[in-house]
Each structure stands twice: as C-alpha cells, then as structure tokens.
Amino acid sequence: MDPRSDLRSRDSAWFHRYRAIRLKFALVVGAAALILGAMIRSGKNLLSVAPTSSVPFGECVRTGSHVATLLRTTDPHLPEITGRGGHTTTSISILLIPLSGGGPKEIPIAEGLRSDQYALARILGGDGSTLWFDVNGLGGVDLRRMELLDPAEVRDARVPQGSRPLAINPDSYLSAGLIVAPGTWFGLHSEEEVRVGFAPGKFVRRVVPQESRKQMRRFHRGTLDEPVNDTYHRILSLEPMSAPAYFNAAFLRMDDASEPVRLSDPEGALMMHTSEPGLNGTAVISRVDLNGTVRWSVDTAIDRFKLTQILPGPDAFAFLGTRLPVPGRVSEPVLVIVDLADGRVVTHSLWR
Image 1: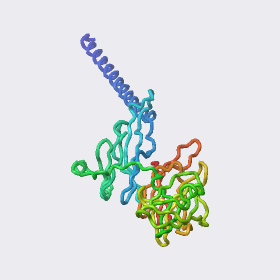
Image 2: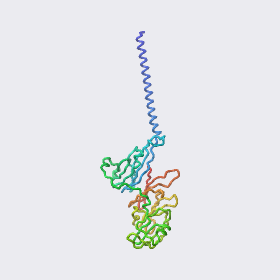
Image 3: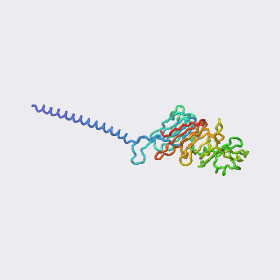
Image 4: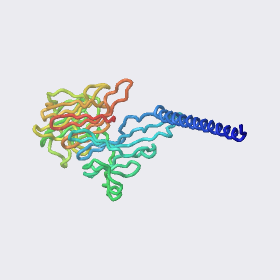
C-alpha cells in the first residue's frame, strides 16, 4: 500500500473525528447556554418579590367632579438580604373617583422611583379642567381626557397659586348649633355642656365649633336675645327636645368659618354622630329637620376615631378613613360619598 495514501486516509479520518467532536461540543455548549438562560429567567421570576397592592398616601383632594388621591405600589424586585431596601423602587399613580357615580380611574404617573424621589409627592389642586400634582416634578391630569398632560403642556401651564391643600382636621367641620330664625337656636348639647356653656345668660355666636367629646348629646331649642354688636346673642332659655340622644353628635359645615349646612324641603341640617360608645363606633351621617326628626341616616362603616378627612360639597360629602380593625389584619382605607338629597352611599376601597 502506498504510504502517502495511508497517511492521507489517516488524516481524513482524524479530521472527521475532530469535526464530529467539535460539533458535539458546540451542541453541548448551546444546550447548556439555553438551560442556563432558562434557569436565570425562571430564577428571577421565582425569586422576585411580586408587586404589592396599591395603597393611598398623602391627602385626598376634591375637585368639582372627582376626589383624587395618590397611590403607591412597590415594584417587583429581588429579595433584600440586607433588609435595607436599597434596590426597592416604587410606582406612583393617581386615582380619580367620580362624585356623580361610576368607577374610579387609575392613571399611572411614574415608576421605578426611589423613596427620596416621591417622599414629598402630593396633589397640588385643580383649576377646573386640570388636576396638578408634584411627583418628582410638576405634572397634571386633563380631567376631560382623563390623561396625563404632555410635557409641553406642563411646561407652558400656569399652576394656580395657593392650590396646594393643607391637611384639615375633620373636627374643623363640626358645629354645635345654628340660628335657624331670628331669636331661635337649634343645637346639639350634652347636659354638662348646657350647664357650662349654653345655660341661660350665656352668649353664642352664629358660628360655634363643636368639640369631639365622648358625651351623649340631644337636640335643644333656645330663645336668643337681640344680638350685641351684631355678633353675640345672649341665651334667654334653652330646652331639650324630645328626640333621642346621640353619642358625640355635631352638625356638619363646609369649613371652620361657616355655619352648619342648611338643607331644604324640608328645612334641616346634616348631623354626624358615633354609632355607639366605646372603641367600635363608626361615623353615622343623618339628615335631620328642625324638629329633630331624622329623615334618613347612613352608617359610613368608617371607624369614627380613624376618620382622617371630610371633603364637603353642596350636593355630597365625602369621608375618608379606615374600617373598624379586624384582629390580625390591616384596616382597609375607604372613601365614602354620601348624597345629601337622599342619603345614597357609594363606598370605594382605596386598596387597588
């Protein structure tokens, strides 16, 4: 046999074996890469902490047509071994709840924010057509389109001065009584309050705040003298009416400088009281006439001691707070809208 032919044959056989080995190695490496990639992807999904439910933060703001609140949601992330939360980010959205009924609209604002980027986030207020907010920068929602404004629209806009809301204690909306006619007082008082501040000879003004106190109050009708300096009215007489007593009762008003809301057909006022003494009382809203008769009454199911905001309006009042505590669970935050005409109630959970 020709030695050169035998050498070529051996070289060819070696080359085919080498190519086969290289092909097998490439297949093994490729398969390993695919398996590793799948493991990494599945590992991320398995180890990643799922996004939490959205929760409200900051003050709710009422516009002419909506109640708005900011919501925050923790973004998906890998578990934090150190516990410092250094890689945890948050998404912010705005929830618009229509006052006239219908479902809420949640509009995303920003995602992937660090805590220092949204710590001061808040709703600034509205100008009728736009709701302005500050979430890591100025932005706005067009209330007609229900969409975020374009950056150019924000850049050229003039945000109303003084639109930044201040947190107002719900007790600021409580009143002890009102002058329903010249010389006639209609009030909600306890026996102690009558002895101390509303006895004959004492003076009242048209605007009298009510303290949130754990006392039973009933309706009283009084006779007032002519006003002194058109401001102070001396009480000539004050008698309890036949209506029952209500725990921590007060009339509701539009702000801390006004008299209680006056309702018509029949004439009356809006009252809030606590459903029962103790720690399980809820905020109850009632429409009463000037004889102390309750025309309708609704229980908001909001823990009276966890009522955080009252948002008044000419046609409906909105109440923000949490439900009564349930052992082992976080109390649910809710927004309750009460129609002043018929007491119709719409409740919205602020968990999303």
